[in-house]
Image 1 (cartoon, rainbow, N blue to C red):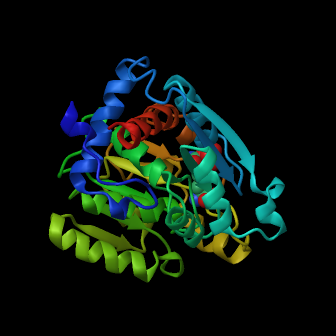
Image 2 (cartoon, rainbow, N blue to C red; image 1 turned 30 degrees about the vertical axis):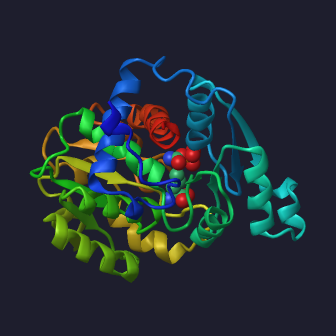
Length: 311
Ligand code: CP
Ligand code: NVA
């Protein structure tokens, strides 16, 4: 057990900071806590963690709040609009004060810089609960979902179709770190950020993973074992009719899925915009694993907390 808990990091701001081995250990811990929800039930006893959210949330907020409670801790939900940050108190000063009262903070915000500054100025663990750039907790959980299906292996054909956003950025990082192959199907105008591509190029040379970006949705999903998508307009994005038009051929529907393997699993981090990036037939169909995927947020969040707060 000890080797699963050996930790090198205080925070989780991006998956980039973790090693392959650390991520794999968190997945194993998630399997343990899923099997026995009472494991580590006193780990956070006497500890309080805040959740500082600038954006909406259902799964991230609930899975952390329930997870913290199941580990014996106390969670405090804070809407940043009601804090003095909203009246000009600096992030650094806020982080210093948080460090005096709390044992950790989960932040959902716009800029990645915000979580970085917070982590630098505080002495408590800072967890990125989604920024415009990354969503590492979601991807830890998604990797766990694939792991428990026994599909986390080199010959997995995993395809993400849709917009290049925080979820895709973290998927690309997670997959290439673990040496897994990933194909992205998107319109050329919506391709992933240069900084993410540069990072995963280097990473895949080290890990031996292959990543492909293709602009043809049929080619992207051909023979896929898993097809994943996310919303076309993320929180904080300016909705543009042009972008939605560009993306329309990348909708996950039964026709597109007929090009994937017959038993291809469908994943979506949720919330879904039914009729936009995915049809109801696809998300409610027998190959969809989105509800287990959502459930696993709880187990993966607990595993992350066990990893960060043990020792
Ligand atoms: N997938 C996800 O992060 O969901 P919420 O926005 O509801 O937290
Ligand atoms: N890309 C989406 C993910 C929501 C969990 C967003 O940022 O809104």
